[in-house]
Image (cartoon, rainbow, N blue to C red; front, side, top):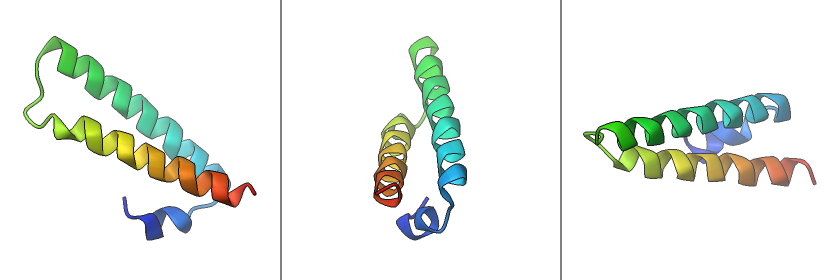
Length: 62
């Protein structure tokens, strides 16, 4: 998700997306622990996406 798309979201939508992404990240980590993922960079991308959303959320709440 691009930063411009993230900035267009409302605070409530952003919080919901963060929760969904965190659940997705946990699922990716669990799947990777059981059997290695074909593309393990998905975990890194998910973490960075969550960080982007948290940054925008903190900017909006100021």
